Amino acid sequence: MFLGALAISVSACGTGDPGTLLPVDAPAVADAVPPSTTPAPIEPLTCEEPIATIVERELVARRQHSPSPGCLDDAIRAPQLGAPIGDAAPGDGDPCWDRCADGSVFVDFALSPLGTDGDDRGDAASSVDVRYVATYRDSAGELIDRAEVLTLRRVPAAPERWSVAAIATVDLRAGLDDVAGIVDVYLDALASGDVLAAAELLAVVEGDDVERPDLARLTDEHLLADRSAAGIAAALGVWCAEAECGRPDAVRVEITSDHSTRAVATYRSDSATVDVVLDAGRVDGRPFVVGIPPVLP
Image (cartoon, rainbow, N blue to C red; front, side, top):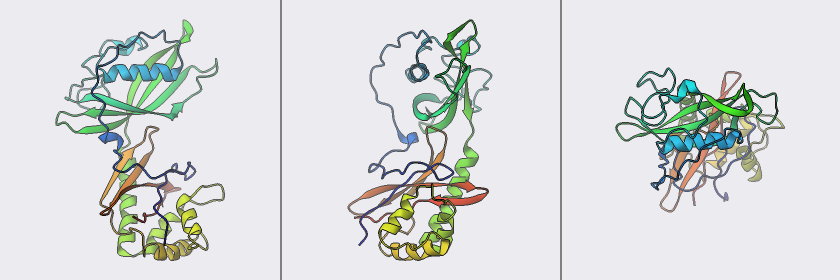
């Protein structure tokens, strides 16, 4: 008997750290509702603090519907409360400070240590982009995730200080749709018993330096002789005798805080609910999936 379920999360090229099973009923970023607590006062910033501190404090101010603590560039300072930022037009999905013209409201954010482009540790660095997921509540009460980038630049007259020079939305809809389509093909293949079609997607991400906990699990169960599509198909044929290879109860595709995308498949039994992360994307144009269905208790 197999020993349990497996979930993984890797980067688009298949080289990320192995993940773990998400907690039972773990919400997606879009499902996370910020705690209803009395907002803490926003202390002014000197703008000489570490970038992580500046970014978090500015985003907390947005979440609390408070003015910037002081590091916004003059170009985007004026519109702050209740208006789009910069040249954003009402309702076009561009970021606003807190309450948007289309009726949506900024309610939360998710930062990632992997979400910074640039080096803020050296004197030569003049600009840093910080990626995060912004969660808005629309006029109908639905929570919507948007990928945003906050750009900081050194102040020319005071290079020890940082200024928030821009806040912009990154359109990831094409990537989300692509991941959803690839994962749907994979899950359909498993559900119909076409293990070779499923294995062909699993076999794309390869290499001795690529961590594949899903295939390692099949190897540990003495099912996988080699990592060819045929070898993986043979292993899946046995694995699916006990694993949940039918269609999952639910599938969601979500944006991560570093602006990658992933699918999360939810499987339920009478005694357990398990969320499995399925990484998907393309390598040199070829669709791939990383992740196998769980065995439920």
